Length: 80
Image (tube, rainbow, N blue to C red):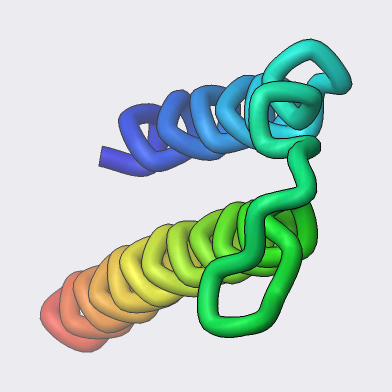
């Protein structure tokens, strides 16, 4: 399962690179305002929050997996 999480981290890096790529960001570079905020600023903060949220989610899953793995090792050491 750890390999799957590491692969997801790789996908997260690629997603971040795509979201903050200038050609993609130029789509949102306009004078339009959403709730008084320029679209580009709103896009940057939403994309940034999305990347941080996904990173926190993956870190929590990885931490839980490592904790359960260390628990299993402790149980097998106690049995032997």
